[in-house]
Image (cartoon, rainbow, N blue to C red; front, side, top):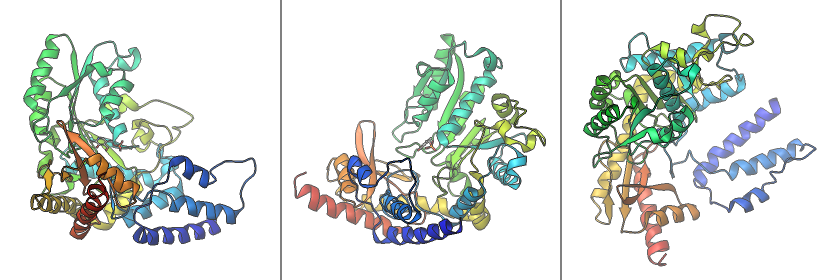
Length: 457
Ligand SMILES: Cc1ncc(COP(=O)(O)O)c(C=O)c1O
């Protein structure tokens, strides 16, 4: 063990050094890379020296998602305190189903859930869990909504046409979850959005009325706090009025930007959140915690228990349900995703989390200002979003993003909204400063001029 830990330490030093020297790994064709790396598993093992060199090569050839040149997805950066917590969780290798096995780690998870519930003004009846990702949190919320609307579904299965409502711009996990839950994708109602990508509550209301008239049972409304492409916030308070009138479960998918709950300046973007029945956010997105760290909370703990509790006497042998969170989780064995977020939160406090969130909006503002002040750019996104969507000199955004990747310059992706395609710059790495955003534009401009426009690509 000691030798492996020493090797890990040396390698971790090399990783952090290389991230500065070479922040983007130049992509190699997958077949070529997989052959080059000796990934084959054999009958006989490999000696330590050879294994260490192979691991070194694997690590150095892995895409770098924590550097200042990674803007590709909705996560990024490396927070050292959260990483410390994650490494400790790996060392301890607990499973978060019982107090007997999890011990104090269960208390750590409970504290996170408790603090989040009180931050969003949920009542004392609220509870939650940590699930493996935002998609799974959304799934759990849908299952609770389904089971709350008909308590016999757990035994009889879905026998009614239950409808679910989500904006055209919502995440594809909502579609997948319709498949998994037995509701079926035909029962999804995709509600139109306004020019800023926000769900139109009037359209939602009209659709619900129509469905009731047609004999459906409206069951689940999903509002998004930070849509995946534009980073738009649905008007939760208005959507809650419709949900309440028809007694429909309201879930808020804050996987991307729900962490605004930590910011005095930006929490207005989730106005009405306390009116929801469930809410989730990913600390592995805006809060720079290692993947994955997703928190789901619900207003009434009994819904969580009703949908997820199941007895197993080979597992639950000591302590009350209160301390055995396997009774309220999707899985059996469950990773400890709480410790890394708790170490981060404990070390910098809620005020520190607020600063991280505010910095991301600040960087997005700096990027939008730059775009507005340079006539070669067209801006597609709006204020109060950390997704900055734009085009440069009418060059195809797909070509810009794919070529920047192929040449190992930057990692950035593209998106589309209402027929327009654009580059999507995500300012989610709160370790970045204005300088990195300006550097981003310089790299993009020089590269596009020299490698695309001049070469006629
Ligand atoms: C709005 C939204 N919801 C859900 C998810 C899914 O989260 P995860 O990747 O943790 O499953 C994402 C991911 O980007 C998202 O943007």
